[in-house]
Image 1 (spheres, helix red, strand yellow):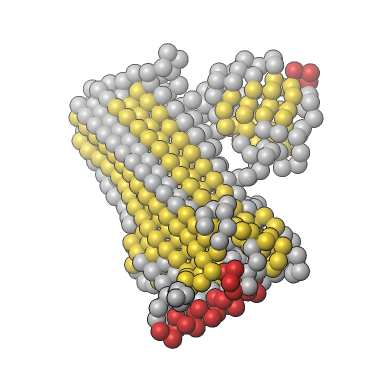
Image 2 (cartoon, rainbow, N blue to C red; image 1 turned 90 degrees about the vertical axis):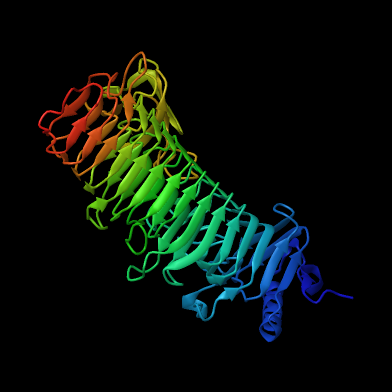
Length: 545
């Protein structure tokens, strides 16, 4: 007897030969099975055996109760293209509020997408189009997205919003958002809009890998600033590498990020800010058990949030600027963040501070961290040119230089009126970050000619383990060990308060601040009030009672 609920695509007009346009046949089958599901409430499955299925010139409107299953990535491949319609975005499956009336009352329900590849490299568009995704569904109920390889789409690879009781697992998303050049803040690997179902959307993203995508590897974004930030979101055991941001929280409530690896991203490994559509930052999140390393700017960057937020038990190392940066971007809320927790982390080898506070905090807790060997950006200003200088697509070589290894980490080098960021350096070579994720060059206008002069800026005099450069009120700073164990020390102080910084009240006790390059502490503004006890390296705090 034939199976009435599993349908072989080849028996319904899809050729899978890489030449025939399979989109009309796929669309017809989706509508047929969607009607059947609507009649009896029993989901159907389209099975696509090994082959290359060409989806051309039209996006496929999806229906509830219709699943799409392949024989595995590389075996079953969907290619997206628009040879007959140069303006058409052709996602494999889409269903949106604006175009199709998607809503909590009209969701995409009971669908599974699993075991296939989406190749968007032949979708050629004149400019960025937010609909040029691999998958673009909204208001998904009981969705399952599993074992997919999505790559080279002009916009976001997996761009699905409002996922309720849904799971995203085992996705590999590579070089998506290839038309995002820093203007749209779209073009992510996995981008999930939130808020459409109300304050709770139960969605788990697990065991996914996102590499060299235009903006975020993975992000959650509140879609309307009037909506409540969304609870129920989790990211577990994922890997984000070489994106603009690794993982971003742009408006969630209580996002849990656990056991992830966030490396070599162009700005921050983990970002909380008001960069999203609603200009609302996340709050209440927990980042734990992650490796956050070798990001071009910062390991963890948190701003525009009212708090709280917890960063606990992570290794945050070898980032170009700060291990942890508390800040407020313009365009978002400038309010004081309350109840921030930074505890039991390892901070080491970062270019400037381990922890740098540049926006106001109230009642923060910085405790039990090991903060060592930061401040690697020690090299003074430098310049060169002439016969000793050469350039490649991602490096500057000066055979006359004698730099301390990684002493220029995180700096901008200027050559031929162009700028690039230094990811690392040897004694005579600067290794540069690509101009954007997925690019093969650091130079937007072409590699400079040999001998062109270059220059590098200097470095801040103070590069402490912990620096307070904003108003910090009633902090708890306890049980931290902040030191430099290198033969040539680079971390100047254990704790610093700048001229713009305030440390008022609070409880600062049982910290070991000895062994830094210059001194245990530096207070350009003396702390006021509070209780300072048993801090190894300072008998008492100047200005404190």
